[in-house]
Amino acid sequence: MKKLLTALIAFVMCFSVVTTAFAATPDETSDPDLISDIKQAMLDTYYGDEKPDFIEVRIYGTASDGGVYFDFMDSFTHWTDEVEFDIGDYTVSYPRDCPVLLYKNNKVYTLSDAYETGVIDDDMLYELYVWGNLWGKIDVTPKGEDRALLSEIKRVIINKYYNGKAPEYLNVEIVGSTSDETVCFRNIPFMSLGVMIEQTIGDYTYYYNHGDDVMLYKNGNVYSIKEAYESGVIDDSILEELSKMNFGLESNKPNTTVPTEPTTSVATVDEPVTVPDTTSATKPVSTSDTATNDTLSNSQNNSGAVQTGQNSVAVILLVAMLAGCAVIFAKRRNYFK
Image 1 (cartoon, rainbow, N blue to C red):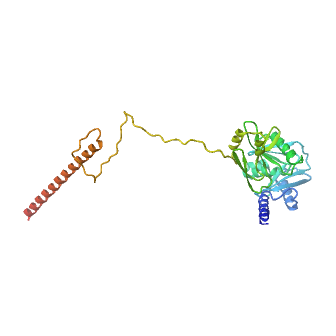
Image 2 (cartoon, rainbow, N blue to C red):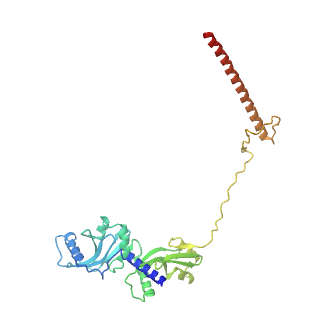
């Protein structure tokens, strides 16, 4: 019972967090005051001197920054072809007869004008990318991606997992491709429970959140990574390529890198040999040692003894000079008295 309650609490928390991004969907937005405000803002800021006979507004949702996305129809003539344009890092398209606009700060903006004037930024574009495809009328894809490929992947997903009936929300994001032309993609979930999954695939372990795993598209089919590997669609070399894409696939192979051995420098005949000084002030010095090739240290000790003797003679001479000066000074002092 406790486990069931915990799971339900987690589900409710995740759902509440997800729905804060866009608090409203087309079926839930029937605020007449908001629609009235949008229509008035369009008359004030969108149209010129010529006003339409009527305006119909359909609200898609409210973004986290308070902006309201909507489409509209009016009494003017519209074309039925599709509008497509680049904005930031994305390509946006929608039917020309139902343009998607933004209502924010009591003004109406086209999406391009809103981005170019700083009314929305890259974070808001990403939010639009994640949620925009939920609305059906607007299609937002990363710039430069093959839209035909994305459409093909979506078609295969719908046929395989949804019995040919398109779900309300289906957003595919290309992650990359491998050397054998396998396309890696992520089906961005409408809602994630945040449950971490750990899966062993060959010599690799794949870590991902439930419902947010990377899948593969090859030869007109879609596979999970584990399914593709176990059915022979991909091999170990492709797994190695996938692990370098940094989406959670990690190798379990032991590290076979041999550590580098430290290098030792050996003195040659032409190189000088440095011998550490072993002279100690407390060590008795012998003056009878004879310096030979085998007694280099004794020769250094004898050299130290000679130096010590010179210092002693200097001290004795200094003391004698000071004593003589003291005697002379005492005689002169008596003389002046």
